[in-house]
Image (cartoon, rainbow, N blue to C red; front, side):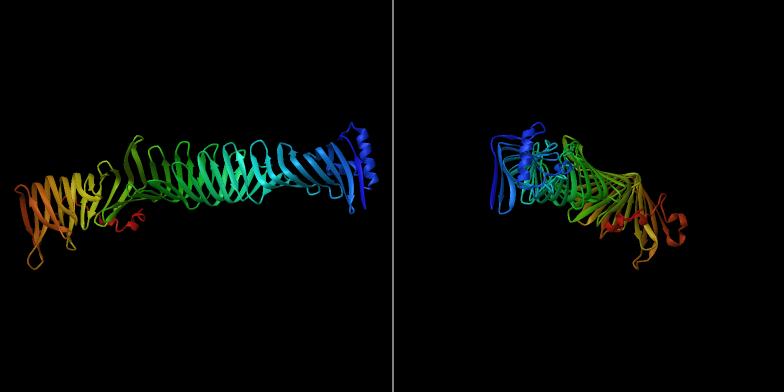
Length: 520
């Protein structure tokens, strides 16, 4: 059976149009459709306007056909379209052409609409989009829960916010919180950066992006990889979590957690981090660090470690605090600082001091406040030391004020030399020669042909030169005739075994690169 009831001409349903209400009520009664109470009317989809409508019953299914400038309403939700079928029994709408839904400040558009009035759930298909004046979400098919103001797409879509475009395979928009969740192949295209991630949460009001899973961020200067983090594009502040890697050639930073303020070029790393500069073959490791772009400033604390790769060896340096920075903003010459309890380790040289400074301008390490250096078994100390390098190898060691050299001679005795200033020179095997200048004193234990100690020789001279072979003192040359006294072993008193100022400090000597961080 097919029953059709027509109402011709423009119909506008409103409280003041009593004739239209009476006519519609009559039609509904004629079709034996239930007319809802006032409380239920708020839940039903209401007809506000149409150029004409007709009531149909096809195979027992009853619906209202609306054509031309159609306007519908359910609670605070308004719907416009070119034509629609309204099913009063299921309280649903199928609509076509110039679809427009308005809910408060939310507007949704498409070519086709199916709206379930009971579930308050809309499906918009064909050039679908939704906007709240802060952003626009585009997709081919959009699902919108009007009750909870949640919209989502499952087959590719994008959000446009000012000059930022975010697209993904799936997306969920929560109007109440102004947040969009993107999932699978997320891509942010912004004039200042590009971001690729697996999952992203974006707040369209605060412009804060929170990303999860493998994430890659690229800008004109650097590329960032991380597992999670967030970025505030309004304040230009970001924070990156586990497995963070920042490539800014020639520099590279890895960290467990990194906070970065791009507008002032400031970064802070917490947890394990590494800063590396391939142009200088240098790395800094630590548990806490800070970074400034303008002078490429890096500061590391909490068990920091600097690694400087040298020819066939590497220098390992630690201290309470390590710093690396360019000499000035307009100068690319880099300087390193290590202060409080500085300790260094190389295969052929180890050292400790209170503070240390290194400049790439002259490739010289400067050690201050009672530094001590060990070259193999020889201990060298003084008030201040400079270790110059050449072609990434030790070249010259300068000791200023109260220089003192101690070299074990057997298990019990020590050969010793002291003087005002000392200058050491290296070859491919290590320390080859050491010149002592000013108030030089030496104490040397001699042996006979049977390798037994026969006594020591104490000499005073203005200048002395020491030559090393097989990592030991092989020869001593006095530049001027010395005042020398030889004393047999049996005649030596306790104070004749050591020069004044003798201080054997081998317990402070770093034994390995690992032992640097064990020192307290």
